[in-house]
Image 1: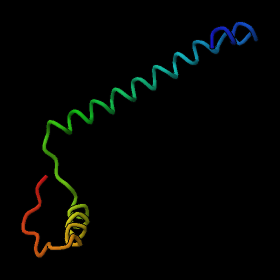
Image 2 (image 1 turned 60 degrees about the vertical axis):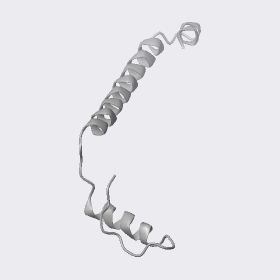
Image 3 (image 1 turned 180 degrees about the vertical axis):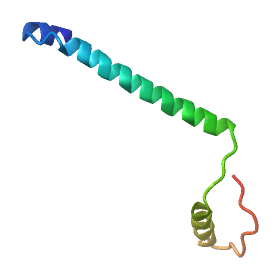
Length: 71
């Protein structure tokens, strides 16, 4: 980008790309941190999600009753 910016007189292009890349790396860092914290901490699943998992498991041949659902 720096070469193209210099060739066509767009000197602002290189700093602009650097700022955009920095913002993207910061966003990625927050996402990775959030995923790591979720992996270490217990969190509850919504009742709608539990119902969805239970109904899908009930469709499996041979399943008669679901008494407990654990991760």
